Image 1 (cartoon, rainbow, N blue to C red):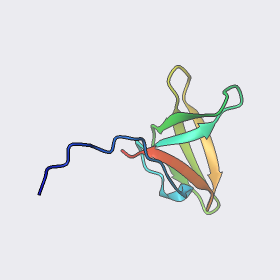
Image 2 (image 1 turned 30 degrees about the vertical axis):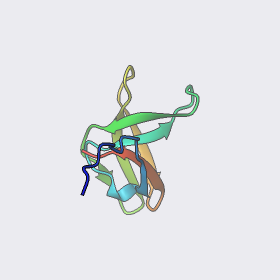
Image 3 (image 1 turned 60 degrees about the horizontal axis):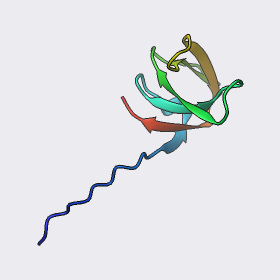
Image 4 (image 1 turned 135 degrees about the horizontal axis):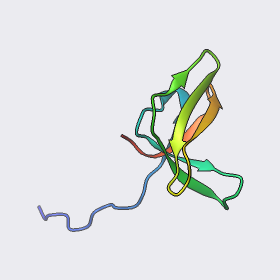
Length: 81
């Protein structure tokens, strides 16, 4: 058998429900002053309630901010912790 010389190196994203987010995940989000989506990293422990998931996110060049999702909403994760 020959040895594989090509590697798969394209970015891969997964959509899953917000309640599965973990500290260190990198998610795609839309921001009001940005075209398209940007990568944001979950930088603090996640607050989960009966109806929502709140995470503190960091986007390079910006101050940290809190994003809230209703339970069951899909979030696009590009990298895990």
